[in-house]
Amino acid sequence: MIEYEKFGNATKNSYICENIRKMGTKEKLIKRFTTQPKDFTFEEVVRLFKIFGFDLDSKGKTSGSRVLFANEQKDLSYGLHKPHPINAIKAYMMKQILNFLVVNDFINKEE
Image (cartoon, rainbow, N blue to C red):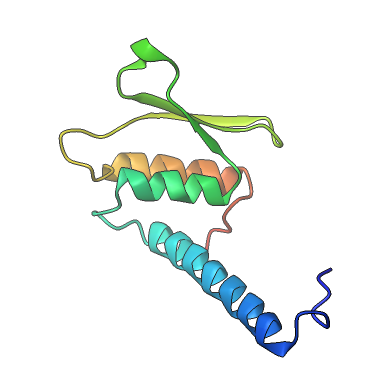
């Protein structure tokens, strides 16, 4: 727990506002992903997996476009290819990622 008294109210309010802003950004990205947009980029997938505690691994010099997202705490990993030449994730890949995140209790599937 942070002791706000020694910093005064201005710092306390700044701290709370900053955390709300960050939380809002994460929630917006998750909500955008669950709508399965056609223009969801690879960079957004990286940010999404980081929200859930995954680290990006390029699998070495010979991996080409293959990447691995690993969550050591839950002993989980998810591999995929970076899209090219277009940066948008294909619809079937979006469904597979969503299924993985739902099955492993990172996202609650809204019905």
